[in-house]
Length: 475
Ligand SMILES: Nc1ncnc2c1ncn2[C@@H]1O[C@H](COP(=O)(O)OP(=O)(O)O)[C@@H](O)[C@H]1O
Ligand SMILES: [Mg+2]
Image (tube, rainbow, N blue to C red; front, side, top):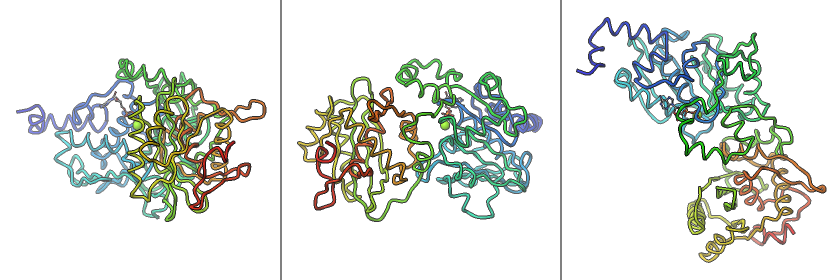
């Protein structure tokens, strides 16, 4: 007989287990979910207050800790939550429709991995899981919903608990529409994110919150009158991160701002941003692809000091509005591998009508990949990234954002790199400045050569409406 079976058959042991689990989610995680809880996450996990914030670096444990809390609230819903005698509704807000939410991923594996909880699953499909309460008197539904949809879904929306992950660059309006009044259900809310600049809803909530752990207090955030409680955890507090030399080596390639924000979890000043925060927020998130569009690709090839090649595909509608369809990197690839990936992404889009032009950064190593792509017959346009050309491409991209004529989808990597770009001028020329981590924006800027948003440029199109060679436009 396993320990679990023994406990299940001994009512005293079971009572002890339940009584302590209700009070302590950490105890619950260790004994009933049977997973280890890391010491840097204990205080947050055990805090049963209604308004919680977890600000942390990458891999600091935001999603896993929040998942443990949600499973705990679900299993003991009728003991902890208000108006949940028969049923608790626990909502996980996902950043987009397509994206599987990391919290929900953890929630499902925690439930399925527990000998106590797994047999109590009532329903399990793509975006929800239902489990019976510990005492069997009711059940909880844990549901993922994309941001922005819950607000509109009507009056009946009153969850008992709500978790929003990685919300630092979700526009305030969308967040507020999602947060229920909670008057009747006294909703428990958990906001978790890596920061993004020193502005926005998440930043303001953090500034106004009281500190939940010593780290947060030492970090300078502790408003004693705060209604929310903030926990702050840098990535390096996670022993798995601190002991993972490969990962630490990878982190060494981060720029100063990336390191401060994404590893240390600090708010870095957004002054001098090349792309204004409000414009970026408007562009971020789900969109519906227009019915009629043309497709273009931008390829930014990795160079010395840069470690990623990025391929971007955009759809452009009849009003020259841009929708980012695809934007992904390839790590440390050879020239033939890069060319092969360009071809694969090109082929992948043939079912969407095919890509009209590929704007290819042919600087340095890019030249080799460009040659191969040209030989296999892809519609490539060669772009040599001089400083002047780069400045023009960025003026063009900035005005697309200013006019709100671009949607980048829920792409966090692209969003972050755009946000880190700083404005700088040399002899009245804009000089985008990024300490070298601009692969995502560069490939987007290349793709956006297909739409010239700035009046300064005159776009020369062929009879299909497709822009002609770069040098005719940007010389
Ligand atoms: N019980 C656990 N199961 C899995 N990972 C855990 C657990 N406890 C702590 N961790 C650590 O948390 C890290 C991932 O945490 P996650 O919540 O995904 O991070 P993030 O802060 O980026 O959301 C893992 O890499 C692992 O080191
Ligand atoms: Mg996470």
